Image (cartoon, rainbow, N blue to C red; front, side):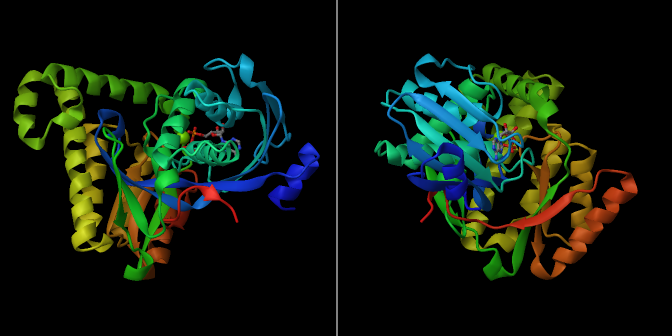
Length: 380
Ligand code: ADP
Ligand code: MG
């Protein structure tokens, strides 16, 4: 049954349309977003769809094929407060709430969500939902908001309704992505540039290795890293770690305690690696960026300490089987690694990773390729 038919079954009338928004993978630039630095994600070829229609009142009714009990969540926009919606519905309802908070006149909607973005794998199923609802609401309410504006709305929903203190990278990638390109985002100015990322044409693939280690227990670690970064910026007298360069690290090592220094060093060197990756993509293409991916992983493992045994093994075993470069991706403490691989080596890399995980007694990982796809929009 199509999503349109399921919507009719559910709500008793047809939707006004179907909108889709992709998940994303971050090629490089981890934990740099909230330090007002650089990131380089791309929108992936797996997305979330939302069938949507307008209502004449201020009630939101939302359902998802994801919740097995086919639960219908009903919210009154007039009565909503930050943090006032529990569970998965906080993402879609939070977007409508955030649009209202930003001063837009928003009516009630009926929404049915379906998604092919794996949940909790570090591919941002959360931003995919937010952005699908955001583009649907934008069009049906005739708001005329840009992708960058909608990204901030999605971020606000996630920060204030869901309560997750995340940056604006995921939503930007989902909204601004383009087939065959990565999104080079300056998280301070929100300026985004598309950078060619021709994988297929170069005989390459980007494998995602989902360790299936849940990153949900990471909340404490994530908050602690944010705090270290704030302390580092404070002591160094800058607005954000984005304002430091590698030349400042000698001074930083004298002023900061050993652990805070390593946290700062990761952010400073990671920002430099993102910029170097963009330059290499423009001058030589994706085949050249492997060593930067490897260096990023080492920095996250040793300096920022957000990796785990499964992520390290995913990286080491894929590199050992011929991957050109590999790193953990996402917030860390679980989730996924990525491996840049020649197409002819995909099977060998996958087999090596599977064998290494079995040998270590870890849960069998999921290994699949992703490619840079178009950002959110209406499904024709
Ligand atoms: P990630 O974004 O890395 O996949 P998050 O924890 O940020 O992980 O977001 C996952 C949450 O998003 C899920 O726990 C659920 O609340 C919500 N979610 C994801 N996919 C769906 C879906 N298809 N329908 C409803 N909610 C979903
Ligand atoms: Mg998320």
